[in-house]
Amino acid sequence: MAKAISAEDLATFQKDLAETPASSVIQKAVMNNGVLAASENTDSKIAMDQTFSIDLSTGAVANQKQSGRCWMFAALNTMRHQIQAQFKLKDFELSQNYTFFLGQVRKVQLLL
View (spheres, rainbow, N blue to C red):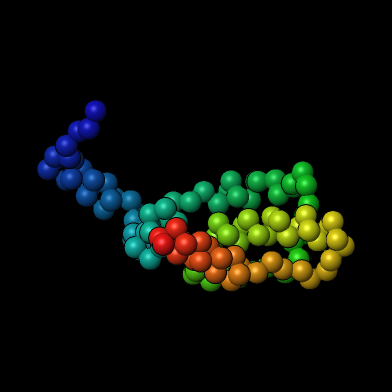
């Protein structure tokens, strides 16, 4: 159940803020980094176990820049690993441009 913030609540918040010794540091951290970044618990990141159950060699990483086609890059990179292993290829990459082009051709065909 939501409760409206009253003038008394605001006065209490203001008083608590003024009485907090580090309030100016906290205010600057929030203003410069945002609430989420300033309130992030870095202790949990430090305590996290970075061990994974499998280790994949990724090879060259394809940069999608800001193409909005992350789904295509992810799918092609997943297929690339299997093809590289099956055919013992090195430095092999599937063409995102070709896949995108074929997708556009298919859309035009559907319109005709």
